[in-house]
Image (spheres, rainbow, N blue to C red):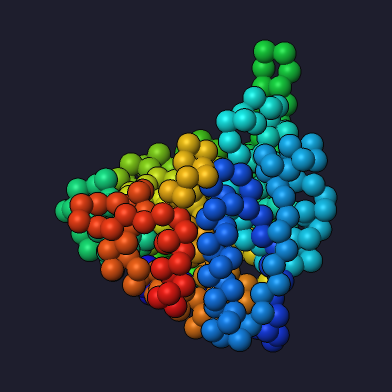
Length: 370
Ligand code: IPM
Ligand code: MG
């Protein structure tokens, strides 16, 4: 990771006037707990090294909450999160809850947290670490020197939150966007693009969808406020194709909720190391939710095989975005870089000649490198 995750702070940098930070920790399901434990240990080590205290409160959400309380997102969990400075989440879901009706599934916890905390901007960096160059499934000549794409996904609107119904043998979902919703996510993306390579690609399906035509016009209107940023538009089907044909053309991509869900998975996979990728979900305030991009991987849960680095780097994003602790975030990212440079790998990123380590050892190595 090294410096690759040095994403510039958002327009109004969240200030760090105090040194005691309250973090709600949601381990969730599957490998969620194992990877979260390692990130928590890293945060504790950061606290000791830099003189901060992180007050962490563990709360339940997802499948485990369904088992215990009969709902994926208990009100008490949301309350603890609302009263925290930030939320660290492992992963939710698993086959055990797959047969539940849609509105009772563990994934509802994520949607409830995003909406309940007003986290409309989802930042998903797809970065290929220098030590993991061979990990991409794409040919080396397509990858070139590496990849560094930032997907900015709208997170609290669109088809995820529109009216839906199943009636007899029919069902529908609605995609709805207001100008305000598009403008605030587009603004976030312009700000980020302005601090990177000043290239922004807005992805939509404006040849078909009204919401996309609205989206496009709002982005174009906003572009006048950011003359230094070069804006382009692309249809989502083309974007999906271009991502595997020539990913180097992309820098910052801004798109709606569902297109962002799909394209961020694709972008993460072309780095070949989904176990490495963090994400941040932000709103207008200081509070953010930080989680790995990967899921709960029930097949390897509890076996000390999961890669904790995505969660550890998500914690670094928390330090940077919610607490304004840039030096601390750098330190964590550099520690991760060092461990990878030394050749230590969990199974998901293992390659010939490298040293295979488990979840706990990987966490311990990062702390050592700190
Ligand atoms: C993601 C996930 C979630 C989403 C699911 C689990 C609800 O795929 O965070 O990308 O679709 O947003
Ligand atoms: Mg997804």
